[in-house]
Image 1 (cartoon, helix red, strand yellow):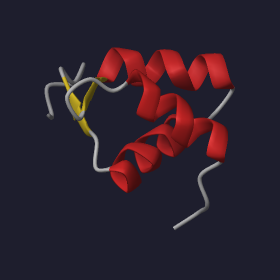
Image 2 (tube, helix red, strand yellow; image 1 turned 90 degrees about the vertical axis):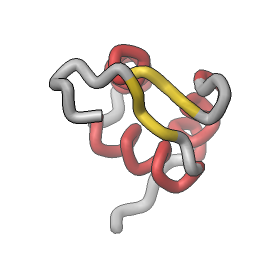
Image 3 (cartoon, rainbow, N blue to C red; image 1 turned 135 degrees about the horizontal axis):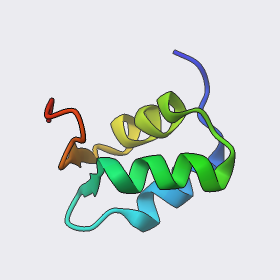
Image 4 (cartoon, rainbow, N blue to C red; image 1 turned 90 degrees about the horizontal axis):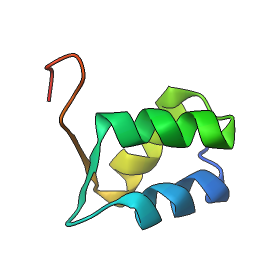
Length: 59
């Protein structure tokens, strides 16, 4: 697994509420940070944060 930058980990952790982050917010963070969406997803996984309200209906 590729390394996740600290700034991405911090942003995901700060954006999460009750251990969750919406798919829309994950997309926004990726755009704001200039990070690939997969890196934001990896950060959420590492932090034990679940992605909810998936825009594809997967989660």
